[in-house]
Every structure is written in C-alpha cells, then in structure tokens.
Amino acid sequence: MNIVLIVFDSLRKDCIGYYGEPFWGKVQTPHLDALAKESLVMDRAYPESLPTLPTRRALYTGRKVYPFHNADFRLKGDFVGAPGWGPIPEDQPTLSELLSEAGYRTALISDVYHQFKPSKNYWRGFHQWMFLRGQENDPYRSGPEPTKEMIDHWLPPEIQNERRIAFIRQCLKNMHDRTVEEDYFNARVMIEAAKWLQQNKDAEKFFLVVESFDPHEPWFVPEQYRRMYDPSDGPEQVISGYANTSEMRPELVRRTQANYSGLVTMCDRWFGHLYETMRTLGMLDNTLVIVTTDHGHCIGDNNYIGKRPYPSSRAENDVPVIIRHPDGIGAGKRSDLLINHNDISALILEFAGVRPPTPIDGISFWQQALDGGPAIRDHVTTAWGSAVTVVDDRWWLNIKIDGTGGFLYDLKTDPKLTKNVADDYPDEVKRLYRLAVQDAEGGFPEFLQDLCARQVDAPGCSSLVARE
Image (cartoon, rainbow, N blue to C red):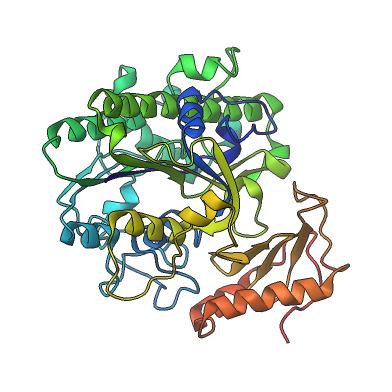
C-alpha cells in the first residue's frame, strides 16, 4: 500500500467545512470536504508538542518531544525558538528511514523553510527531498528592495514597527516575480508533489510527505480568493501581530480573517489538484491518504491574533485528521477517540507493516476508531514552552509546568472554553496536573523550569497551586 501524508501549517480545524466553521463565517473547502466524506475523520486530535518543528519531530518519529530534555537549542543559522525547536535526535529513527529500509520509495516535498535551515535534518531517510524556497523570512532573495508604497500597502502604517517592516520587506523580496496563481507557495508545493507522483509511477510502493507552510502567515493570497470573504477595497493586512485585536480597526480584523480564509480556500483548491492527479493516475485504489496540520491560529478569537501556549485555545490545539483508505474502509465514519500526532506515526507504520526497532510512544488507533472500541488514551498532553494542556473526556486544563496559573474548562458544559472553573474544581486541577507530570517521565529540565519562572500568569488564571 502506498502512503501519502499531507501536512498543512496553521490550518484551523474549524476552517475545514466538514468540521464546521470559525466564528467569523464559513470557509469554502470543497475538495477537503469531499475527501472527508470518503474518509475516517478524527474529531479529537491534538498535537504532542508545539509549535512547527517540535510538532514535526513528533510526527516524523512517533516519539514524544515533551518535556524537552536536551532540547534547549541554540544553533547557528536559526533563531532561538521554543523548547524543542531543533533537529531530530540522531538516535531516533524517522518514518522515512524505517519505510525506506522496508522497500518504500520515499520523498518529501516542502516549503516549510524551518525544516531546511542550517543544523536541521528533517529530510533524513528520504530518497528524494525538494525544498521550495521563499516563505516568510527565508533569505531567498536579497533584492530588489520593495518601495515604501509597497510596504504601506501590505502593512498598514498604524501597525508598523521596525520588526514588522523588516519582516514584510523580506517577504516582498521573496515574492517579487510572482505574477500568476501557480507561482504562490501552496500551488507550487502541490504541483511538485503531483509531478513526483507522475515521475514515480514505477515504484512498487511509496511514501510521500507533502508539507505546505500555507495557510501560515503572512496571508498573501490572490485577490479573487480574498474577495470571496471581503469584497471591499480597503487596506490590506496580512501579518499576525501576536497582539490584542481590540487595538485594531474592525475593518483590519475583517480583512485579516478574509485573507486567511482565502488562503485556506486556495490551499484546498491546490490540494484538489494533487488529489485529482492521484485519481487520474489510478493511485487512489492503492494509496492511503492522510491529511492533518501541526496546529491552528487565533484570528480574533478572544480578541487575540497569533498563537500561544498559554492560555491555550481550541483554535490552536484542535487539529484535523482525515484518513482515506483505498478500499473505502471507514468512509463516512467519525471517531471521538483521543489521539495525538505520535499516534498518526504509529498508524503509518502499521499500514506499512513495519515494526520499529525500539518502541515508540505512538499508538495505532485504526481498528478502535472503526469499531468504536476502547480508547487508546484516557487523556492527551500537549506541550508548548513552559505550559501544558491536558485534555480528557470532560476537562481541558492549561497550566504552567510548576502547577500555577491554571485554566480549567468543563468540556461538557463549556465546549468553547469561556469560563475558567479551576477554583471550583481544585481536585480536578490537581489530578490533571499529575497526569502532565507523569507524562513528563523524569521531570522537567532545568532550562524549562527557569523559563516557567519567568512566565507571567495570564489574566483570569487561578491562584491555585496544583503541585503537591
């Protein structure tokens, strides 16, 4: 059986029409919706660790990154990112290495430029890897310099600062010669992935990983997609300010949401190109297709734009997982099993018939999801920086690793996480925090504890101390 894994970056689960819609209005995703109708759809999937690189390390290896032991990376050629922002450890086999050894032809098509910065190694084990340059601050082009008028068009003067101007300046240099839709990043990724399929029809079996950095910010999108959600001719706004949106003009917030929605729809359109290529090549009859994302993004949720570990939200932590079996098994079925990205790795190995040389942390969930069988996990722990989020059948706890600053939500009565009830249920806070400590296996590294000590309590958190 062939396997195709497609990972979008920052794609909100609620922006796939099959899953629902965000608070600002429905997003058009006809191709992903059609895929979901032919697939097993997981309704309660979460990252193991965040953000971009820790997530992919967990997905590519099936092993936990939390609690970030030996993961305070300070490497040349990259910024100092969140804990875990670094390469895959040499002693951890990757899916591509294991499947290559099992006779699969393997390939990675990606524009996630963090994966191929100096010191990174996310292409390990692939027979072919293709990195498409130019996203964000990738030093892809050194000129020509954009004009002030160009910068002011994409970055309203009222939200400009030195850092944001430098960011937009590099983005505009990178996209200087872009003239048609096919020149945009997500289109290029899907076109190259489709081309690889055509060039490798002779493979007995293959494992293809397709990584689209879109719909991650900046939200540059062809005008026709944006106008689907905002037909006005007002100012543009394409960055994530990681700030309170109450200070932005309402029309800028609307334009941001429209650009994001438009980029999601564009991603869907070009995913459709890849999917139809598989159909015309006859590959849907012998290929397992998995679509997921690393995390979502807040775009005005709780008056915030950006993504953050604390306080966490469903916009960031809920991730889609859609699995289409070539024989139609599971088509139209939805499962509420709790899973994380490690479990997708285990499922891929199971379908490939590959046993890892040492145990991994992921647990394959395919049969239980189909049968409605017993849960593979009674909770999931998602780690990001010095905070963790623990989710079980009823509760959502977001808390710092020292057991302070907690947010507890009752998922049965408050699925949108609007009321912190930590002070009303202190025993639940302590129980869930113990699960987070238990999942840390060996405690928290010193650098993470130091980071936690500097983390300011978020407004509205509980004063309860969960550690004992």
